[in-house]
Image 1 (cartoon, helix red, strand yellow):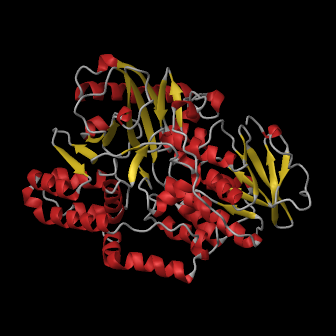
Image 2 (tube, one colour; image 1 turned 135 degrees about the vertical axis):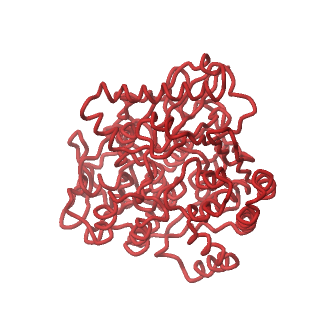
Image 3 (cartoon, one colour; image 1 turned 60 degrees about the horizontal axis):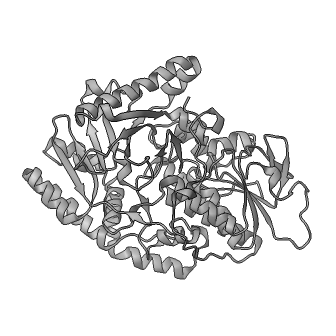
Length: 559
């Protein structure tokens, strides 16, 4: 759908007698699509307004010269059948007809001297490898691998019911699932990875463990490392066929099959409020659309500051968006991405993902870098279809500050473009030095900065994952979901969903959409319903649809 005019007519203030309650969802990212799917399954009538031409938000891809640059998914929690997270994806049709790629290695870390540590997903292989590499660090190695085995055996449950609506039986079931490993979860959740890594005598292990997640998320404890590594070993953190945009397209297909409507190129400018209640939205073209409830599944600061005009808040929202937004460590860092199109195959014998630790003098050449490292992913090894026949794609990334990119873009666009070319030049040189001879096969390097992300998705400061888990923001976000039920106190008919409400990560975003629909059904006195998608059509590249280039004509911008 190219615009709102092709959707149902919701321009009247009152809906027809006897019709189902109407819900407007702002944003067709994973949270917005999930909200729409669950609301449709529960008998509500919904429509989604999306400013871009594609679904997915940050879960996206774009094309250039026949290549597909898959931007988001590194691994997806919930790919193993029988898990709570898989139930969410099954209800949303996200994995319908798709194969899933699983890797035996989670990531490899290589230092400046070429020493490498490989993080095998299997705890036995990992322990043997680490002991061979650093026998003097036997105690922390065995401690980590012992905990990993326990996580493999006791994977934490994923709750599909909103916290404020869980029955006593559901709470008891969760308690029984968690209790056998409660002390393990508590201890690893309160042990900082940075502190644990200091136990290693070997300098490589001391630096490599925090970068197991490609780059080091500041403030993370042991728990998420162990949880994710165990999930990968159990087949619950794979890479789905079709990648990021494929995931979004599948949920979009599920939503429209349930009767939902999406308006693309439909930027919402204002949430309409009458008498302390949200009654609809006004689009950029001036048209107004009315509903019984509005769900904002998009950038949080934009929702509060622009769509609600800065007039509605609460102590929890004040803390999140006033006190914590600009405080370091609460938002996931922005990322610089450099996609590399190669003529010919990937370098042979390489794992799918490697973090290269850079000497300080080299790192200083990477504009805006926050850590002395560069991640290189063999993206064509993740799934087919990312490159034309006989060609391959690499994806190089690093955590970057946002402000220096934004200031340069505002001050001097020519210098901004030159800075992106510095990234491209560094990547070309680094790849040639690391994989001799590859330089002559590089056909293109496509660079996306944090400002690109901000323009493409609307995410404040170009943060892909919004609020960071295990930060000060987590407690406030949990209060927003649990106590406030994803509402803005004092404003009826309005709720929020997504990573700016329920922390970062695709499964969290999708689950927040389920929670939003559950809370809404309870408010309206309607039964919440959900069931697995039954689509069995195999995934094929045609399902990606028409792929945009990342340029000014497609809302986002490779500036």
